[in-house]
Length: 119
Image (cartoon, rainbow, N blue to C red; front, side, top):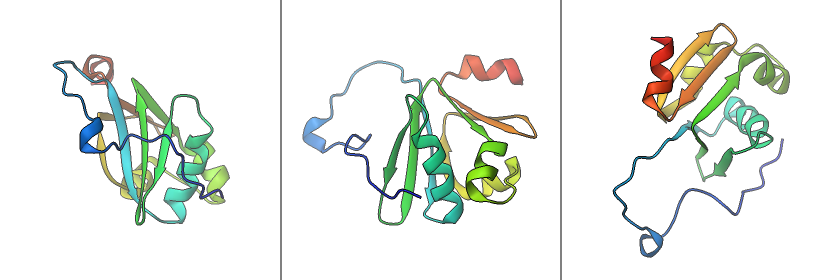
């Protein structure tokens, strides 16, 4: 598994931050660095529009609009079964609306209205 840190990540110095009166449709997860987190990060790094940031003890996965996590894909990279419930345990925190679509799919929505279709 690759542990190379991406040079382009969501973290900026205070001098680079611009405060705007806008709505963000970003979403993401933070995971404690673990075998499971590295497998998830490796898989998600290959998907378009996803930023993976490796920190000393954590891994961040961020996206715009929505991020779809497929348990069968994660299981293949991990080498053992990943379920939506184990996935939620692997994530320390998330932002956006997390929805378990079915036994194979967990989606994070950055737009609350998109998530409401699954309520």
